[in-house]
Amino acid sequence: MIARQNGTTPGGDNGGTNFGSIFNPFGNNKPVPPKPTPPADVSGYEPPAEVPTAKLTRISSVPVAGFGVFSKERLIDVPVTPAAAPAADSTTTASAATKTSTTKDGTTVKTVAKPTPPATEFAPALRYVDRGTGNIYETFADKIAERKFSTTVIPQVYEAYFGNNGNSVVMRYLKTDGATIETFVANLPKELLGGDTTGDTEIKGSFLPDGVKDISLSPDHSSIFYLFDSGDNMTGTTLNFGTNKKTQIFTSPFSEWLSFWPNNKSVTLSTKPASGIPGYMYAIDPTNSKSLPSQILGGINGLTTLGSPDGKMVLYGDDGLSLYIYRKDTKASSPIGLRTMPEKCTWGQRSDVLYCAVPKSIEDNKYPDAWYQGEVSFSDQIWKVDIASGNTTMIADPAAISGGEDTDGIKLAMDDGENYLFFVNKKDSVLWELNLKQN
Image (tube, one colour):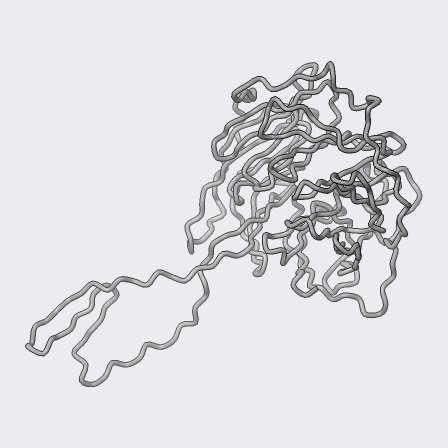
C-alpha cells in the first residue's frame, strides 16, 4: 500500500488569471459554425463476405485503468553460431578480455580486446495499470509477453495515465470514504537494458490536491494539465513530470469542464456534454498563464470534441452522435458520415487521418448521457477516415476477427510509427491491439 502524504497546493511562478467576471460559457457571443448538411450514416455499414482480416491481439490479462505507449530500447536477438576452429599454424590465442600474439622475432604481445557492444533497437512498448490492484504491467507491442513491473497495491484504480516516455504514472481512485477522488503521481525507476524485470518494484510518489476533476496529457507526454476545485473556482494547473514544476494557467467559476491537450500551444476545455443542452469549447495557451481563453465552438447540443495535433481542426459530435470536422481557418464544418463520439477516436500525428470505434447500430436514446451512464453499450467496428479526401473505410470488425470479441472501444491511441492501434474495451476494460501494418 502507498502512504498518504500531504497534498501540495499548486503554485508556480504566478497566481494565474481569474476572469470569472468576464467569462461566461453560456454568454451571448458564441461562434456557432454554419450548420452542415446532416451526414449520410454509414456506421451500420454491412461489409461484403470479405471482412478485413486485420490482426487483433489481446494484450492485458486483467482489466486496465489506463495505459501508455512509448518507445523502449531492447537487445536484438542475434543467432548464436559455432566459433570457427583456429588454423593449425596459428600462434594466436584469445580470451574474453585479452589477445596474445607472437611476432616474427619471437616477442610475445598481449592486447586487451574491446568487447563489441550488443546490438539494440527501439520498439513500441506499453505499460498499463491493473484496475483491481494498481499493479503496473508492461509488454512490447510486437511481442506480447505481459510482465509485472510493480507490486505496489492501490485498490480500485479507475483511471491511469503514463507520461515521460512511460517513466511516470498518474493513478486516480476513491479514498476510503468512497467520495473523495485521490490522485497519485509517481516517477518510475528505470530498467536496466537487458536485465530481468523482477516485478517487485515499489512505486513512490506524491499526491495532487484532493478532488481533481479532470486530467489531460501534453502531446509529448512530459506534463499533465489538471482541474481541481479551489473553493469558489475551478483551477487549472500544469505539472511537469521531470521538474515537478506546477503552473496555474486557468481559473473559472464554472466547474463542469473536460480538458484535452492536442498540441503545445493549446489546451482545450469543453463543457461536459448532455443531450439537448448547448455545449461550448474554449482554448487556452499553456505557455502563457496570463492569456485569456478563446471560444472555438458553441451552441451545439451534446457537444463533444477532439482537437487535432496541428491545431487547425476540431473533431466534434452532437447529441445525435453525428461527427463533423471544424476547420478554424475557414470557420466551416463538414460531416464525416460516421456516427460515434470523438472520445472513441484518435488523430494521426500529422492530423491527416482519424481512427474511430464506430457502433454497428445505435438505438434511439439520449446521447451521450445514456452511454456515459452505462445504459447503452455499443458493438463497434474500427473505421479509418482520410482527412484530405474525406474517404471512410472500415478496417476491422473485432467481433468477426478470430480471437476477437464484441467491443465498445475507448481510449484509442497509436504508437509513434502508427503501426498499431490500441484501445480498451469498455465492456470489460481489457486492453487490445490492432495491427495497422496489414491495412
